[in-house]
Amino acid sequence: MPERRRAPRPAIVHRSSVTAQERTPTRRARFVVVGGMALAGLGLIVAGALLALAPAATPGASQGADDPSAAASDRAMPIEADTNHVGEGEPIEYAESPPTSGRHYTRTARYGVSETAIAPGNWVHNLEHGAIVLLFRCDLDCPSIAESIRTSVAPLIPASAFGSQKFLATPYADMESAYAVVAWGWILELDRLDAAEVVGFYRRHVDRGPENVP
Image (tube, rainbow, N blue to C red):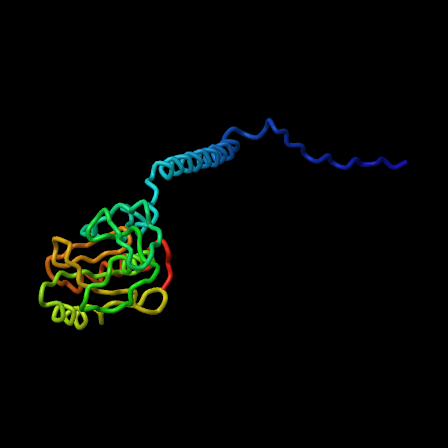
């Protein structure tokens, strides 16, 4: 019988024959992945701790004194404990003068520039709705000051989120500064009428009252 030829056996590579140099890149890659995951986890822990320590926003004060949009000249005011409605014409005592929060009448004041004093109980209700009020002292010259506001400030006031100006100006005697711009929980006092300051305050605080309505 003819002699059968055996097929050559395939070469076997043992695991032990893989050199240390060939294993090193794989181990290094594993170390890099594990190390990166550990650093990422540590970063999340640190970020969570910082968020826990960060001060919370103050409700009802245009996001509070830590509001990043507030200018250095804006002064945060404490929110009065009682901010309920009272009967129209009922006497109201405020902790601050001029007030920036507190009890108020059920009716809001009409937006625009007034030559006669509007009761704080009405315009404080506007503040609650996120409006801005410009107060000005005037003894016998209220009409001319009101006209100056009407011509130099009012046209520069932009529309609110509701498509119309949420701005009114009224005489107010019980304050030290000549002018004061107020929002719910905020005040900016001015010695003279400065349209840029008034408009800047308006932009920073409009639509930020506890009741964001027109």
